[in-house]
Length: 316
Ligand SMILES: C[S@@+](CC[C@H](N)C(=O)[O-])C[C@H]1O[C@@H](n2cnc3c(N)ncnc32)[C@H](O)[C@@H]1O
Image 1 (cartoon, rainbow, N blue to C red):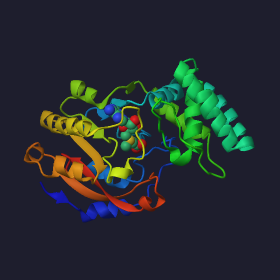
Image 2 (image 1 turned 135 degrees about the horizontal axis):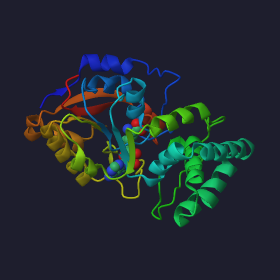
Image 3 (image 1 turned 90 degrees about the vertical axis):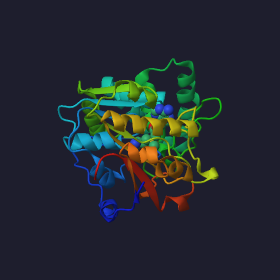
């Protein structure tokens, strides 16, 4: 298989991401969020497709981008992730926006007065307690999820062995906690009857995707080094076996006639899975190596330019 370092893709990477202000955009900071990579990913949006699937939703950068460009008009979008807090948050914004906004405004006020002390109070005496007991109102959990994301260290979502959220407070002098206008636009976008939101593992796509559908896979990155595994997103983590399953799915879905796009790191594990396998090439998949900037890295020095892989059967 040819690993391409395409000059046009490099140029696209240098293009600034400009969002139309009236469109919904990601409201969460998310490890591996794809806002920076949109100029490149747009080149792999198929010109025609039936339904859109995004089974590793995170902050939904690609969904919001497709929506802003009118590419989802008249099409179904099936959005999913295994992170229950994340999907619960989206569902509350869709169904109970006013309650979420009221809670979030109160949290922002508390933070303005007490800063990190308020963050730890909310994290330890409310968020983790209500998550564990499952007693919390969905809207209050959603507001706390957004608050902790906007004010916690690097926007990470990390759970300890007991399944408790344990990210320390970030050091932001004036964090933007409640962007009411954007959350209203997000709520509207999610309320479209054509948009489905589900908590489910990525494998479920295999059951229902049909020829002509477009699927964007953005799994947790395979770590570039042993010490680089900075976040797990979920208590289960994402194993090498999961990456292997995903590879099998990519080949099967491409053979089924779906348009598939997958982004991942340039870790050796991924090169070996896709780059040195003739079955992958026979399924019509090609690998493009593209420049990217990692938005979240526990080591600040690691936030510079790095390469990333895009594996796809869409011709850019
Ligand atoms: C790299 S992030 C996706 C980032 C997203 N594209 C964005 O722009 O923010 C990977 C996501 O996969 C989710 N995830 C982890 N394991 C999963 C699984 N087995 N099935 C589905 N989603 C999973 C994580 O919760 C996380 O949100």
